[in-house]
Image (cartoon, rainbow, N blue to C red; front, side):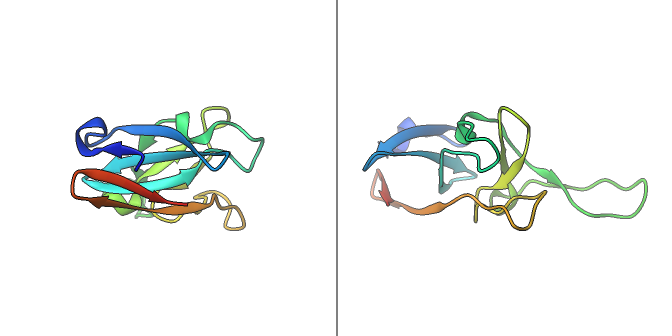
Length: 114
């Protein structure tokens, strides 16, 4: 267990250490996600960066924000690179990814499987 439900309300995150690894746990729209807290670019504490939606590809002068929980990203606090919470994939570089971990709500406990 890394937290109880009321410790991590919607939009909140928490960095925990499990087996010597720093991992960020996020509540996005009532769904829980966990990412390794190291940006692959220069080793920044990735999970300390802001979480937001991202722009979808669209026609010129039409702007659509992808802001569903599965499409939200965390941005590296050092250089702004974005990684999807759902799968750790970089939105800028298809070859770059951050490790993700399974996290579940079990009763009122948020449990991380690392």
